[in-house]
Image (cartoon, rainbow, N blue to C red; front, side, top):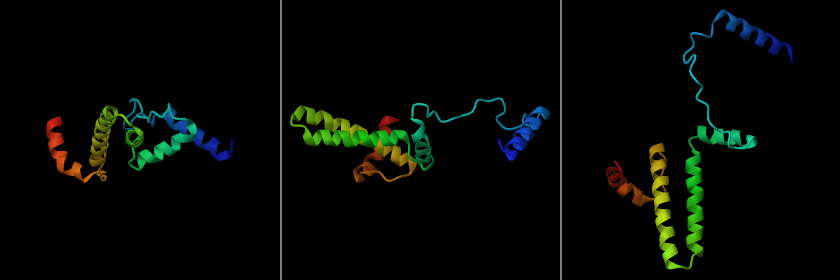
Length: 124
């Protein structure tokens, strides 16, 4: 340990012993930490940067699901399965557009802007 670390630790210890930390806001309450325990350690900083920039893991997951469903629709040959996938795609796009509109971002559909108030009215 270098000298500055020893001095810092000593000052923190003395302040704690004097009770200088007892009047801080949130004293005695649990910390509200991001639960990134399921994410590999080398990716946690990237996830934290994305979150601080306004991108949510849910948004990324939905975007990946939309791309997967679109790919499945392109390669699907059965009409019933194509209809089912199209319905799934519509639900995922609706959820994605809802997240984007709450965040203030642009949605990927101009149609959504026309129907957004009607959809919110039905859901609420």
